[in-house]
Image (cartoon, rainbow, N blue to C red; front, side, top):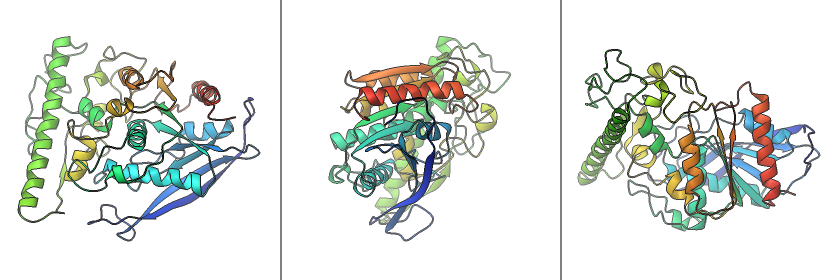
Amino acid sequence: MSTTEKKFVYDRIPYMVAFEEKSAFKDTYAGPSEFVALESHLLRPIDAPSKTVIVFMHPIGGGAYLPMVSALAKKGLHVIYCNSRYRGTDSALVMEKVVIDLAACINDAKQRLGYDKVVLAGWSGGGSLSLYYQSQAENPTVTCTPAGDPPNLTQANLTPADGIMLLAAHISRAGTMTEWLDASILDEDNPSQKDPELDIYNPDNPNQPPYSDKFVARYRQAQIARNRRITHRVKQRLAQFKNDGLEHEEFAFVVHGTMADPRFLDPSLDANDRPAGWCYLGNPKTVNNGPVGLARFNTLRAWLSQWSYDDSHADGLECAKHISIPAIVIGNSADDACTPSHTHRLYQAIGHDNKELHEIKGANHYYFGQPQQMKEAIDHCAHWLRKSKLIE
């Protein structure tokens, strides 16, 4: 594979990965109840054959046209972006089923497309997913979802990847959302009932940026406590359904206030080059109760699998301890979603020394409008792939 500065032209080939899966109930909108179809894109450089492919998957997908994905193909690298079955919505998303989706994509890449090696590319929320997948492929331990439902990953025969790239990644969906949770909300049924000393968007709050260590510690504990209160309610309702003989019954609910991390208002916390009063979705005060905030719309099983601080199996830090493949971790110094502590915690959690860590100065979360920063990140990836003998 070429390592020059030549920009490769590539074919973008849309295709489907389809497989049968028996399920007691349907949690996605379209298609037969026992059929899963994953929308995928293969970016195949012309005149650059390779037996190695980089595979992206994010729990809710939608990143096939991100700058990083196309830039890797222009570098001469073969890339697959595969959407999970939950493309575009996570209200019923179960991480264990997403692991099964990623397995189907990897098997298709090897068996049908003919690739010998697969490198996982964990972008943002895809980082903890990739770590979860690889840890279970190497040492399967998860026999059911946190709600006690299939799939059993110890019986899934997951194919291990050959390398992993963690790119602008956060530690986990559960951990990240808890760090962003509005700690001031006291009543889930009446979100206007708030602790005024924890309401960071209240101008009358005596606690203002730059925040004291004491306030931040109190806020973090209140965030975890709120997550646990929601989890308790979820488990109570599931238990009641089962006691009533309603084994597959579900319940939908809204979580208000999920974009209230003190770091958004005080950039001296977990400091990097990001601006104050901003997050990757815009003004965090607006996003806090807007429709695109993390964990806004939920079901019981999805909450336990994705968002429960204590119950989700997809903890990137824990999963990273159990992988043995070469790893590269790349953080962005102006990232307004995944701050430096996430980058460094992931790197430190990887339980071996065959790993690299890089930070791209001035880069935002997506590299939008930043071709130089993008080039630097891609160059690091290409060099690491060659050094790790993952490409020729």
